[in-house]
Image 1 (cartoon, chains in turn orange, cyan, green):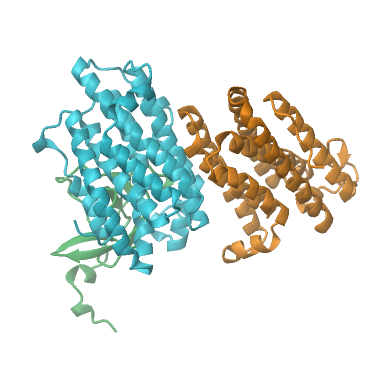
Image 2 (spheres, rainbow over the protein chains, first blue to last red):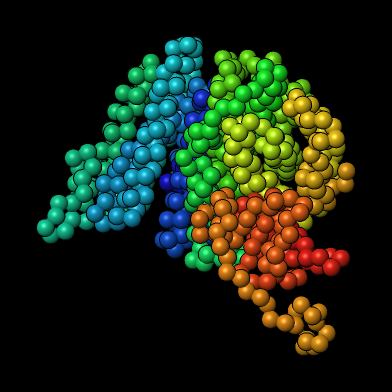
Amino acid sequence: MQLIAGERCALAASSGLVNAAPDQASKTFLATQTLDEGRHVEIFTQRLYDLGVKPNDLETTIKTYINPHLGKFAEVLLEKIDKKDFVAGVVGQNIVLEGMAFSVFEMLHAGAEASNPKFAHTLSGTIADERRHVGFGENRIGELIRRYPEKKPEVQRMQREMTKHMLATFHEAFARNGSPAEARTGAPQKDRAGPTYQGLNLAEASNEEMEGALSATVLKEFKTRLGRIGLEYQSPV
Amino acid sequence: MPETDDPHELGEAEFRNTVHSFEFWFEAVQGYLHGRPYGSPGLRESELTERQRQGLITTLCNYCVGETAALDASSGMIGFAPDRGAKIFLATQVVDEGRHLEVLLHRMKQLGVADPDAEIEQRANRSLLKFKERLLEFVDARDWEASVFAQNVILECLEYTVFRHHAGTADPVTAEMLRGIVSDERRHMGFGENDLGRRLLMAPHTHDRLNQIKRELDSLVINTFAETLGELGVERDDRPDLAGDYLAAVARLGFRS
Amino acid sequence: MTDPLELPASARRPRQTFELEETGFNEVPKRFRRFYRRWRGAGDKLGPNEALCPVCKVVIRSTKELRAGDRVYCMPCMSRLELVEEEGMLIAKVIY
């Protein structure tokens, strides 16, 4: 459910950015990203159907189960997109949102690899797409940030806001629902070690440990990536 | 994808889900894009006179304006598309339009244009620019019916007619590139007409509003059409019948011209 | 109940069936390609199992003879069509 909500946000954001892109090459790349995000929405929706949700109940199911913090996370980003703010939009979408998605998918992939190869395969395709998106964000925006340094404070404020909502999303997801079901499916078998993510045994780790591992990984990635494009990571705490 | 290979055996919902899916789009475009970088399977350039080259560059500049309008509009429309199927279809359209822009710019470079953006700025048809401006206003206003009408019915029909005609007379490299674009336009046009057709059946009052938009845009479409064919050196008597496609499409939707 | 004698002659005899070959049409996924072909313009005579899509001008093909009331799909432009008889001709009309 949260994956669909995240991908829908990515679809709205990347498509909205096409119009705001200042050059043809960015427009073209963002067009391919729009297609990728649309495909992700499609495959995660199909996964929900496979799990028994009826197509007619899709929207109400999403409304019922969407993590409210994820909704706020999307709002902050889409506000920038609505204003056609390309620099903030790409940082929000291709670095913050995609950076978060990348780590979440990696964790889910680690959990599903042995027990649910079909879902793991879907995730690995999605991860391959996200790599391109994150790469575009860094390469294109690095140059724009150097050209428009006055944009830095506003973009950093947005990053802090989005990070705050992201951490709250993780907290609620692990605390309220237990660990995400897909990450838990890889229970260890007698003769095999359980799935691991960032050195953590997912089958045995507590919810707090999993939340901590995911948050630490994402934030570390943020710091590194933002630093590379000339922005300073802003802690929401 | 459905079990059956006979498309006519599909139920209505199954048909729509199939053709609006990525799988369908991916396998469809593979048929005519595979092995054709920039829309052309390595064809040899034919000799163009300087006048022909200049005419072709001006035409390609205008195609770029049209395709940029379609790219900006179709991407913007995803944000307010009424359902998931429409959003996903539009995502495929966005990538089609992005590719069209890419192949057109590449063709301009092949023709020796060093700075395509500057040429587009200088040579773009005013009526087409005005059309683009109005279309993006509809998108900014999140007006789904007006946006689908202006973009997927009017603009796509115009492009479909002009590109098809141009492909029949152009040099081989340009012709092949245009044929690839026309194959995409069929989907875009069909989506627009079918979506709007269903909507008009459910909300007939929309008809009057769209008719007003049509009246406003008609002159821009007709001017663009005439100017483009003029640049291509097509004599008045030899020009394709815009009515054959555009007016027929709007007539099917119940609009009189 | 329908009186077979009241039906038009074409409806009374069994429908012809057709083996569809590839036509070189490449704008839909491979498995559906034989159900479509390019239209060659005004002089292109349609077979009894063929109809012209009014939206995108592609010829739609069926494994059986087409008759008024049949529903067919144009995959290249994603249209649903119904065949109607107008002035003795079978025409495909879009159903929205």
